[in-house]
Every structure is written in structure tokens, then in C-alpha cells.
Length: 125
Ligand SMILES: [Zn+2]
Image 1: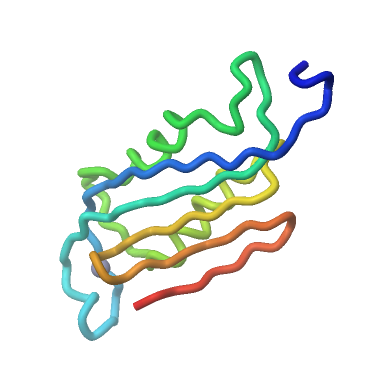
Image 2: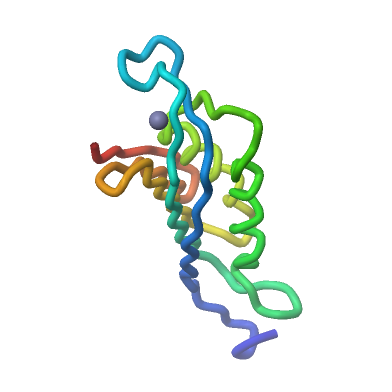
């Protein structure tokens, strides 16, 4: 193993984006079908593992969000819920902390944090 079996935690960062239709049923503004150029930032802290010493494969992070990109499916969830679901997805055995920030516009984001066993969100609008 690396460094005589002693392994420190490493944080990796990935930025990606996707374009999607959005509708929040019943919301006075977002209840009308519209779209977003979502920007995504992900921080993963954990122990590098596997043959390449990855905390997580950068490509896997991009791949997760590709499911939403230019999809026929309209997103009916808030950025908060999208961030929480993504954070839960990226919380693997070797990862101790996950931060997922989803920008819905240039000025608004929702951020989900999975720290040890605690999952939480905060929002800036
Ligand atoms: Zn929207």
C-alpha cells in the first residue's frame, strides 16, 4: 500500500454542469415549465483506494449528472433535493465527507453536506 500502510485523507474537487427542463408544481414562479443551465461542484474527502489511488473517479462524478443533461424528463425536484440525492450517492465506504453544491442560476445554489453520518443542506438564494 502507499506510505507504509498509513494513508491520509485527500479531498478531490470536480466541477461539471448539465442543462435540464425544470418545473415545481404549484410554485408561483417555478411552476411554469422552464430550464436551467445547472452548474455542479463536488468535494469528496476520503482515503485513496484501488489500483490508481483514487478517492473517487472524476469521470464517475461527471457521469452521475449526465443522466439529467438534455433529458426528455423534466426535473420536478428542487436543487436542494438534487444535491441531497447526489451527496448520498457519492458517500461510499472510503469517503468520509461529501459536499455537493448545485447552482441553479449564477446567483443561487443549494449545498448538501454528508459529514460522517450527518446529511444536511444549506441554501443561498
Ligand atoms: Zn427552476
